[in-house]
Structures are given as structure tokens and as C-alpha cells.
Image (cartoon, rainbow, N blue to C red; front, side):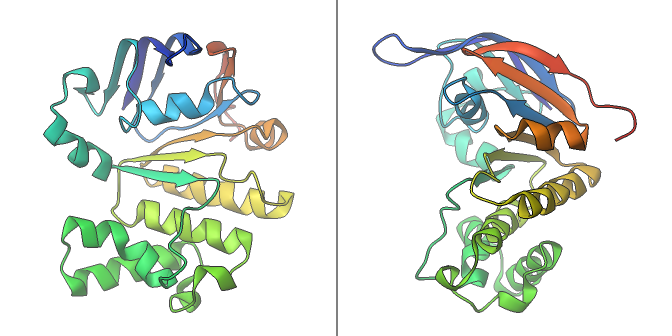
Amino acid sequence: MIRLEGVTKRYPGGREALGHVSLHVRPGELAFVTGRSGAGKSTLLRLIPLLERPTRGSVTVGGANLGQLARRRIPHLRRGIGMIFQDHRLLHDRTVFDNVALPLVIAGVPRREMARRVRAALDKVDLLRLERAHPVTLSGGEQQRVGIARAVVSRPPVLLADEPTGNLDPTLSAEIMTLFRRFSELGVTTLIATHDVDLVDRLGHRRIHLADGRVAGDEPARSAS
């Protein structure tokens, strides 16, 4: 589903964020990308929806080589990728319902279908009771769940999360990771960047470790998971 081959990313000024990275994430797989701050985790994730382009090498998503993708096709690519950020990026002047509905509004989904899908997504993250609340009234964990519901409401085949538990306590972090596991079990290819190595080790899923922009380790999922 996601394949990087010989990917290098250099920023203006010469800083190399990624160097000669090659990896393959299979359809429906749940994998974690770990590494210290500055190791290249966020850059790697940003290449997949073409928020960044590689300096060298190729990125393929769902069989499409992104280097050959026409600019007009980028919105279509991004509609198939749910993205979750550490800072939530919620609209605080909109309700929870409206925040989750935003991707469907952009896609032109009919209102009745939109309402059904938004409520289904909120139900998956156990927030249906708060659909009329505003984000400012929610806890950090609840805001992160709203971000997850928004990311999955379009039923994307790929889900990316950049440090989704960075501001949460261990209990909430484990609950959020359980949600990602459930989506993976439904066939969603899920790639999560995190520095929480202890939590990743407990979960037992594949772990891709970056150091100085290179793959320093790639541990397969434990069979017991």
C-alpha cells in the first residue's frame, strides 16, 4: 500500500531529513515509526500525502507513483488518506459534529449521508454524546478523538498519525492506540509516528526505527499481537 524506495529529502540550506530510506507497509498493516526528535519521522509521513516531495527516490501509495502524479490528482490522493496531528487542528468556532463533517463538506457529500457518516465516526470513538459541544470544552483526549473521527469519516484506506499521544497521559495514550488497532483490523493501512517506545513495545506491532534520517531498525510484529 505504501512503498518508499531510496528516498532522500533535503531542505533548503542542505539539511538532510531523510537519507536513502526504503520500506514497504502492506495493505491493512499497522506500523509505528519511532526515533528521537529530528530523526525524520514527520518528514516521512508528510511525503505520503505529498505535503512534501522527495529530493530523490520514489514514493508509491496504492500503486500510484507520486512522482508521476499530476497536480490536479493530488486532492484525490489526499481524500484517500486520513491525517491526525498532535495539535488536533480543530476549528474552535465549530461544533464537534461540524469539525468531523469538514472532509465530507469539501467532498460534496449529500447532507443526509453526511450526518449518518459523521455520527458513525463519532460513535466509533465514543463521542456521539458530544456532537454539539465545542472543542474548547473538551479534554485533550477527547479533542484527539475528534481528530481521529475527522480523519476516518471519509473511510480512507490509509491513516497517518504524527505523535497522536504526545500530550496525553499513559492511560489515554493506550486508549487512543486501541482505536488505531481497531481501524487496522478493519483493513485500514495505519502508520503512526511516535516517540513512545515503551507503549509501542507493549503493543507488539511492527516498529520502524529512524536515526539521523535513516532506517536504523525494522522489527516485525510479534506473532502474539
